Image 1 (cartoon, rainbow, N blue to C red):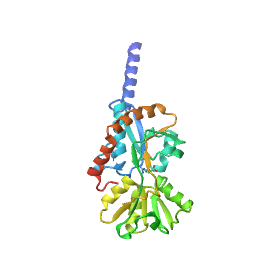
Image 2: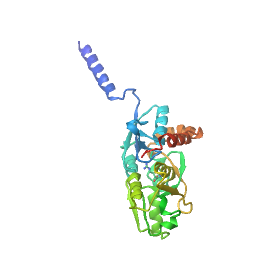
Image 3: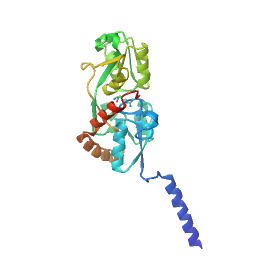
Image 4: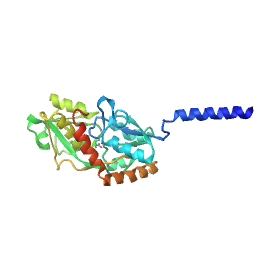
Length: 264
Ligand code: ARG
C-alpha cells in the first residue's frame, strides 16, 4: 500500500512538473530586444509575428538559431538603454537588437560574430534642402537615446566639431520621426537600414543622406552575459554558417520588400 501511495505521489509530481514546461519541452531562452527598429525588430501587423507579436531580422535570425540549438525563445521588449543592464542582471539571456559592437559595451557584455554592417543616416524633410551635416549647424537634431546615433552627435557637439541648437534624445525612433514630420526638429539620426524604412513609409516627405566624414561604419552583434560563454559559442557556430549562406541579407531583402510599409 505504502509503495502504491509513493508511486501515485511520484506520478503526480512528475505530471505537475511537465505541466510547467512549455509544450514541446524545449528549454527557453529570453531574448531582450527593443522594438520599433524596423527592419530588425518591430511589432507585426495583426500581431502575427515570428516570435509572438514580434518580427524582423533579429527575430527571424534568433528563432532560426534557437531552433537549431533546441531552444524556444521568449521576447522581452524594453528601452534600448535597458538591455545591457538586463543582461548583466540576468533577467534576459541574450540581446538581439541591432546593437552595434563597441569597445565600451564590450566591457560589460560579450558580442557574437558581427552579422550586419550599417552606418548612421540623417533623415530630413525633403523641402528643407539640407544635404550635409554642416547644414545642421544651429539646428535641432534628434536621435534615439543610448544609441550610437546619439553618441555620434553628442560627441561631435562636445568636441566642438559642430554646434547644434539642441539635441533631443527619444526613447524610440518613431516619436522622433513624428517630430521631424511636424517640424519640431530639423533632422533625425538613425542607423541606415532603419532610416530607409522610415523614408519608404513617407516617400514624398522624407529624404536621407549619409555623411562619411561624420559617421563611421558599425557592425551589429548579439550580446551575451560575460559568464555565459557556452551559449555564445553555440550561437556563434550557427550564426557564422547562416552569415556565410547569405541568410542575413536574404532576411534584409525579405523584410524590406514585404513589410516595408507602415512597419515601426
Ligand atoms: N545600432 C545602434 C546602437 O547600437 C542603434 C540600435 C537601436 N536598436 C533598437 N532595437 N532600437 O546603438
